[in-house]
Image (cartoon, rainbow, N blue to C red; front, side, top):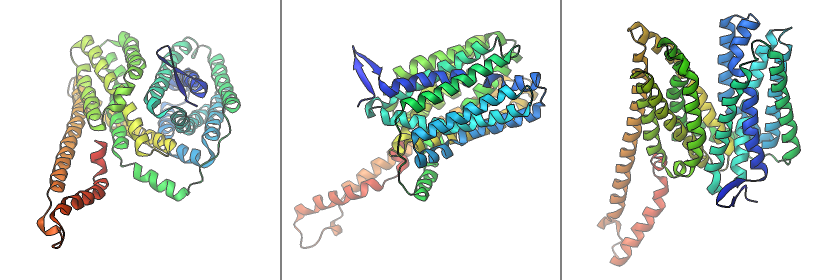
Length: 440
């Protein structure tokens, strides 16, 4: 049965995809009612040291993203539905532990780690289910709509909770826990039981390790490395420039652009080859980051628009290209991309703090955006160079195959047979060309 059906010229989700669309909104809505305020709550309300809180937040982020590979392997072992239920159960327990943190503050730290681990289990299995449920030609639209629903939930969650989280956090914790318990029950009731794939575990891990060096995975790591400079340091920069009042509106612009434009451009993003997508995305990142640091508030908004355009193209394209690279293992594709994004985010966090300090010591924090933007432009240039090299190799390969050496033809063969024989040989050798060239 088709997961998406046309009606009155519009594509409407049906069945399980509609349920996943609702889940994609409610789960981030619940988690982002709590997680963005975790540092404030743990430090100001519970009195935990910032060093300890920061360490746990960093470990939780690493587990959430880089644990995606583990989640993918588990889903291939026990099945997609079972892995989603396990992930939701772990997250429900994690958020429930915040209810006990008023008596035992340490349980909130354990809760953060469990919430991150649950997401690492749930997300690869969930996206793999969406990929398998949607028709092949509608996969980009399905994934982009899921992404948009998640962005809406992430935007509304903090707005709803910000009024209550510090003054009266207990109701927020109860609501978040109830949302996850309800969604766990809904997944158990609405999704049919599945059977795990009976593939060799060692072979599965070997293929997954090889996937780490595929172009879309490397692009995801590099993209998150550059993009997280924008996410992590925009608020700090705006505060330095006395522009903090515009921060909420800046984030709103970023969110609305992703929500609206990514589904509209999903089919075009799929048709775009990976090489041009990298040049476009990293070019937008580089130009956007440089603009953020210059020309005041106008530059900030122009930079946000440019970064948003790069974001909506790059990360959807990386997901789609990874799914094409591992067509029979969608959970592994998603999990590998998430692990790469986690490593890129970690590298960005480590490098970003030092770069911001260096720029500040130079007398202007605007220098930070020049340094980080230059990295985006450099990656775009490398991607363009890779496209040029791949193109020339392709032209050279076709030229060599078009030449038939006289010595290659048998002496007693008819002249007419030489060309078909060479063409057949060339056809057999064509699939062995560089995989990077085919990706670009």
